[in-house]
Image (cartoon, rainbow, N blue to C red; front, side, top):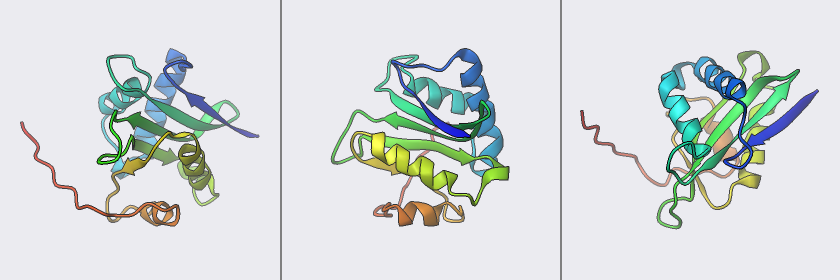
Length: 147
């Protein structure tokens, strides 16, 4: 049996749950992921572990193990920049193609207050799901990385 759990600054995961989510995302984001410390930073932001606007983490669990997870950070803005940014979403490799990603995205859209932005690589297969759920590509992102 699966269940969705949502963690917020008012309902935080245990330290073990947080580490499990970091490891889950690091492993199942595969080529579209980031190092563990960056995933942890996004999770800590969503939980207001340091000064931030917060956000939430939702995960689908089966037998107490995550099989899909999403991290959303609130931006503190609205209108000109969406109120939320979906930072990470991943589905366990053994559970892909079963609708879990769609279920988690629909849950996320339902509980997020305000609009949602996300970054997706052009070759990411999840891009089609995002488009079906109403996400559009209005802008081309340009980024200056200062070293």
